Length: 199
Image (tube, rainbow, N blue to C red; front, side, top):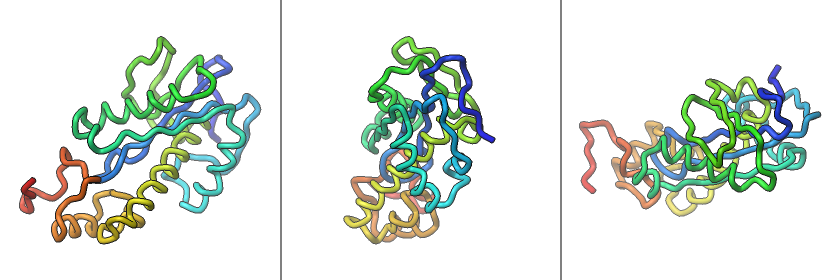
């Protein structure tokens, strides 16, 4: 069973990101404050749920959350500031976009930077421990997947509709064959060393 709260603060916000390990597209973060009486028996870390369950949960989270926000940080910025900083920036943007300012932030993982003097705690595998982080993981994943589906239409040969920009064998084969697009992260190792790309 996932827990509702980590702190004694009423307005506790959970935040998480999706897409850190991708070769293309943004890193996407969500921030969610759940009501003090929230319950959901299906809600879990997005990686533990099927796409169908994530899509089922997304509107429930959006309707029942006190407030939620989603933010993308795109590949150009990832290349400038690196993926860790981009992930934290996306989480900051999501938290800053909440209609209600949180009193406490719980963050999935072990890296975060202070934001607006709001106290926070990083929690390793927090998306499998706390409902608000699990809810944020689902929103981040579903919003990012929807974005990758939309840019798939522009470059169908990379099959982002299926791989969402992750480094699958098929995605790497397409990079080898067609080169890179404006959506690829140039600071990432897009191909193994023996298949170097010339930018």
